[in-house]
Length: 80
Image (cartoon, rainbow, N blue to C red; front, side, top):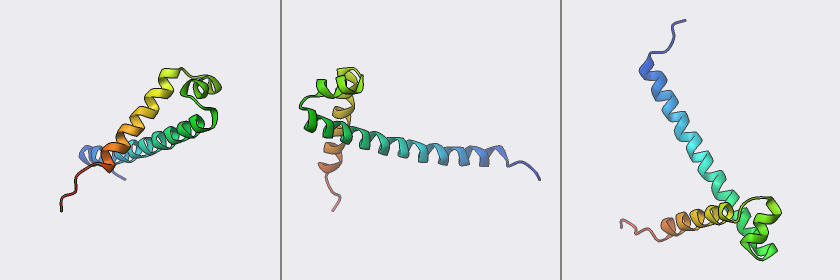
């Protein structure tokens, strides 16, 4: 059996990387939503960070990135 030509291997790996990036993005969104649920339960970002043993900035950045992404997708103009 002959190995795949290098161009095909690159195409296959590009497809795989695209799928993995999409899965990672979806996981980050779910994680940020869980962090927001934690804020609802505990009261502040600092409380969530302390509970998880994470820095306040890491939790805040994850939430802000998610909210920014969510706002840009919901506020996007339609092409109608």
